[in-house]
Length: 302
Image (tube, rainbow, N blue to C red; front, side, top):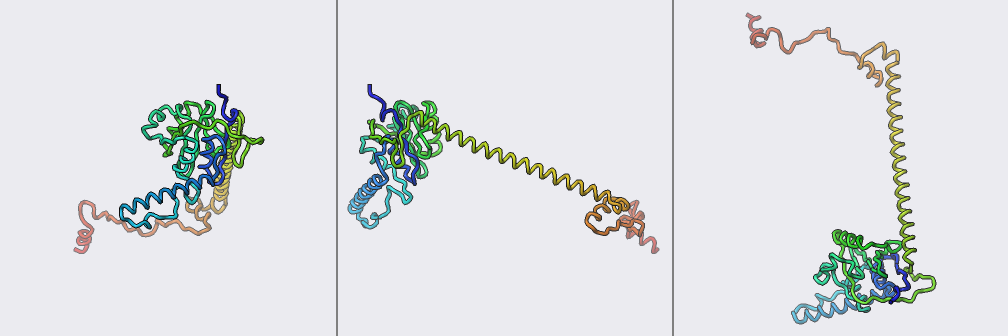
């Protein structure tokens, strides 16, 4: 019976600069088989081949060859993101085939992803690999500190979530390498071999740290809210005490009335209206009975 690949170890690379495509390819192969220079060379070869094909097509069509010649690469961007063609070319060196998950050839994998051995996923300049190693599925996203174990049930749900979120997903098929020379310290430039137990422990520790950070942040928010409530209550009590002191002042008590309190509060002198003076009724009593005010005046003249 064939033993576990790489002695049962998991190979994981953590994010270095913007080399997620390199990390993705290497975790598919479970070893440091490619560097960024290797993928850049493949991208250059693809660019040259594509330019040559376009120039030949332009010659047959009568278009100017200069219309198709460009130094801008279509297989690696300025920020280091490689095209799927580059990853496909790298994996083809190891006789591995890349199949889009939405193609008819991958119809079964849409509903039973566990029949595959590896997936590569891409969205917004980020690549990562989901890989089955020694019969168990792992998420080898380079943004994680260690491979994340995935149950068979969760694998299907996770891939569905990625598809719904707009990720491009490809299955990788073929005979994967089973052994890679492992250094004595179990590490490379930005990769390391881990036992499944070590990977689980690292993931658990990071999750606990993340939970502790979130819990501390929540406690701080709660404390700030309590302090704000105490400050508000103190301000309300101080305002009520000031108002009570104003009401109890002798000059306010002698004057009485709301207007006197308010004027004392503002430091203003306020004279209440005098209702004993002349008052003009807007509707004279003489107008009762349907007579207008002009008719009453006319009667008085007559």
